[in-house]
Length: 186
Image 1 (tube, rainbow, N blue to C red):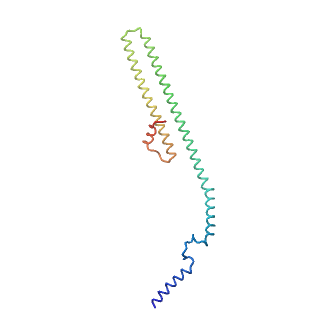
Image 2 (spheres, helix red, strand yellow; image 1 turned 60 degrees about the vertical axis):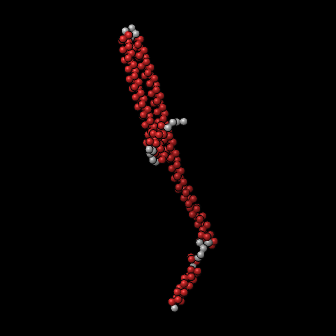
Image 3 (cartoon, rainbow, N blue to C red; image 1 turned 90 degrees about the vertical axis):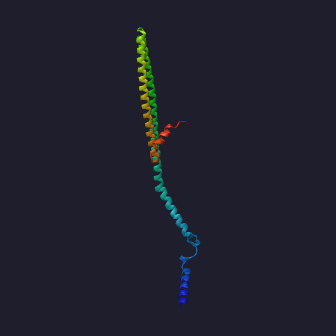
């Protein structure tokens, strides 16, 4: 009797799975009888996603791209103005240097002309004094030039760091900025 109940249980399970369509042997997406419904829902989902993308996502994305382009343009304009200011400062420095040298040379010539009547000893002492003044002035000018050029480099480094940070969201390493500033231009 135990064999019959076991056999009957197996037969009942086999009969239930054969009669139940949810337990069919074919994979539902590959069943030809469901193609119509699948194509309908594919079209519905495609249209819904298309409308979502075209009405919500793409306008936001284009707004972000326009904002980034505006920011990039503004940053490039700022960098160009900073570069122009640095170049103007360099030209002004060169002009003041030339003027200072011209004044120093003019002063030396006037002093030599007025002291020509004095003795050779006084003239040589005065020329030595003037040479020291010129050297001190050139040292001062060289120091100011170095200071001005270091300010220009700092401004360029700050501008480059700000631009890269704005574009990428991360500030570059100071060594990378220094290497980029030291790289020869073409």
